[in-house]
Length: 500
Image 1 (cartoon, rainbow, N blue to C red):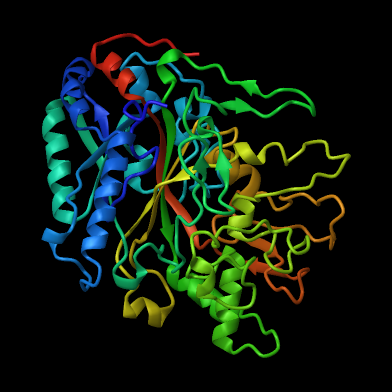
Image 2 (cartoon, helix red, strand yellow):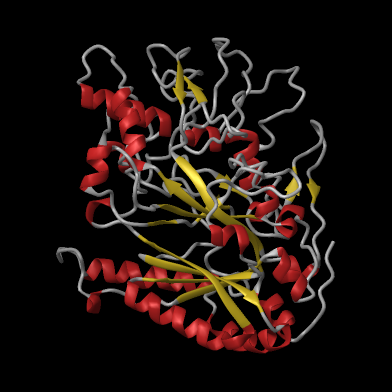
C-alpha cells in the first residue's frame, strides 16, 4: 500500500487539538484546477501523518513531568490538510461516480433515511431536516478542506493559507470549527465519555492490540483487499466492487454536525438511575449511563467491568479485549441496545434458519472515525435549568469504502435506528423484548420522537427505557470523495474521469 498516495485523515487520521472544516462551492472549475495543483503540495498524506505521530511521541517523552497545558514551544507544530469533493463538486470537475450512489446523491437526499426529523412542509421529494441549520439547508457544497493543528493560532494560519491559495476559484460557504475539550476532559465527547477508543486495525498496516477489531484495508479504502460485498451464500467467495482506476486509494468521508443536548441527557440519567441493591443514587446514575453507552466515562467497557468503572481495564491490551459472549451469551453484562454494541456487534451467532446472516457482514461493517467536539462547555445556567441554550456537540467524521454497504449510512439506518437489531442468536436466551433503538444516536423517523431501549438494567433486561426526546440531533452534513494523490494530479490536469 502506497501511503504517499492516500490522504492522511483517512488513515491513520490526523492527530489534532483543533480542526476546521472549510466547506466551499466551486465558482470557476478551470481556475480551481490550477489552484489545486498548488494546494496539492500542502496536502498531508498518510505517510506524513505517521511521521507526525512519531514526532509527537518523541515530544511526549521529552515533556514527561511538565505541567499541562504545555507551552507552545514544547508542542509539535502541525499544519495538516486534506481535500474532498461532494457529488456536485465531482460533477463540476468532470469526475464520475467512484461506485457510491449515496455519495453522488448527497446527504440531504438521504437525511430522511438516516432518521432526521422532517421540517414542517418537508416532502419525500424535497426533504428538509427540522434541526438542520439554514446554512446546511440552503448552501451548495462542492467540497471540503480539512485543516488540523495543535493550536487555534496554527489552525487559523492554515485556514487563511488554504483560502488564499484557492482565491476566487471557490466561495467559502460554511466553516465548522472543532476543538478538544479542556483539561481532564481531553479526548472525551460532551456527554463525558472517552471517544475513539475502538478504531479498527487495518490488516497489514497496524499491529492490533488484544481484542481490537480488524478489517481488510478495502473496508475503508477503495480498491484495496476487502473492498467487496460479503458472500451471497455460504461457501461462495466475496464479490469485488467495481471501481474506476482513479478511485483506488480513495475513500468516502461522511460528515455530520451532531448537536448534543447535554443538560437533558444528564437530567434523564438523574431521573432514571439503576436502583440495584447497594448502589447509591450517583452510582445508579453512572451505571445507567454506562449501560446506555456500553462504556464507562473513562472508556472502560461494561462488558469487562459491569459493576463499576475500573481503571485496571484501561491498558491498551485490555480495553478492547472482549466479545460480548464471554463468559456467557446475553446482555447481563452489556445490553444489546448499548451504543457500542449496536454500532459494532463484534460477534454474532446466526440461527441456522436466519434469512439474512449477520456474522459474514461484521468484518465489512467497520468505519474509521475522526471527529472532534465543538462548542463551549456546559454553563452553570444550563446546569441549573437542565436545558441546553448553547450549541455544542460533535463534528462527526467517518471513512469507509461504501456508505450503504456497510459504512456510516448502513450502520445508522439498519442498526442504530432499527429496534429489532441485533436479531436473536442461536442457542441464546431470548426474553421476547425487542432490543430497541441505540439510546445515544438512534433516530425514530417521523415527528413522533419517542424511542425505547431494552436491557439497560441488568436486574431486569426486559425493562423498556422510554426516551421521549433525542439527546443528539443532526444540524447538517454531507458526503465527500477523498481522492488519492495521483487522482488529484489528474483532476488538476483537466482530465475527464469517467465513473462506474
